[in-house]
Image (cartoon, rainbow, N blue to C red; front, side, top):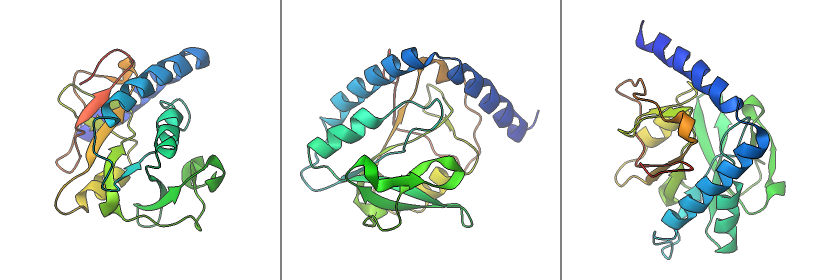
Length: 193
């Protein structure tokens, strides 16, 4: 099986497992993952004005809304990407309320184009979406390469790459190409990696 086939097979397998979590259980697990993530975020220095980049949950992803709201309460800027499909790039915009979002590429909520742009160099921490992760911090994304390109475009110091995932998303090995990025930390409902 080629690497591409391995990725496709694992994406389908993990998506099926994640989608099978009942909605109420998914919310409970998401709340615990966010609580644990906020404990980590509280240890970071936000005084120099760094921003948090977060995804807006889609389908059965971990609901990161409590983390975004925690940032708003502390006046930490929150950047959410707009997908530029033609170039497969992410364009960052600051949001300060849920009404700043509209349905965008792939049916995922994105900031309105009029929301203030935010420089990728202002990001201190990125909550990185993904389907599967391993204990070596490997990540299997959705296949578009948006986040790999985003991190590859950053020169110098990288922001903290934080993955929020359900325990069932942790696999023995995430198949990766050379250009695929690894995350720095993974938080699940039961452990830190």
